[in-house]
Length: 255
Image 1 (cartoon, one colour):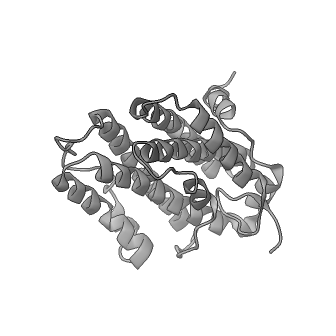
Image 2 (tube, rainbow, N blue to C red):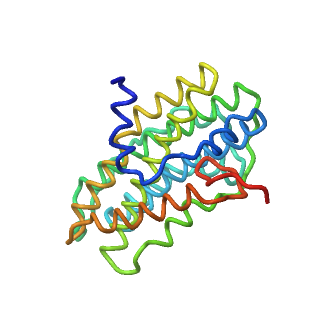
Image 3 (cartoon, rainbow, N blue to C red):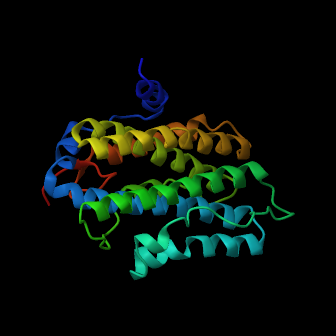
């Protein structure tokens, strides 16, 4: 079994469906490279933001919360206000200050440590995708988010700590699906893109497991039922018709 197959085996067991061939056929069309890369770019930012929002809300001191906002500021300026460029984002994925847990937080330092590491990696990946876009002359444009993340967040319960548990489980599914799609796409892409997506698969394969570990640590109950329920909802979004092609969209259908 190859390294990639070893990485994918638990991911395939975790996900309730595989990416439909129709999505892959749409994704590899030359005319869709731009939307695929721009949406992937925003997926990396949003993955980092989601982790940041979690620890800002649940775990860190006010000073650390501001540090996190400042860390994201140049990326958000670029993505939402079109300020900055590839050069201005270089080296910004590392954080210079430590992120401290608030004294009354019921959540462990493990939540902060895992999420800060994930943020660093997602912001580095954002820069790498932007490098690829720049090298290929693909300009950045704001694009509308797809239905995927919003559809998953409908599953979140409204009381704590169950809401946090559900958000962590959703994070696990988003990361696992991203890995599965990197692997689906890689064989159909040119050498540079193939190598890049395989490298992302290697670095992000553990993210979904980190999310699941944290969810079970925080939950007062066994999470397997919630994992299954959210997994079914995730599979429905992936396998049902979708008129809006994106990195995490469903089966392409004509509007």
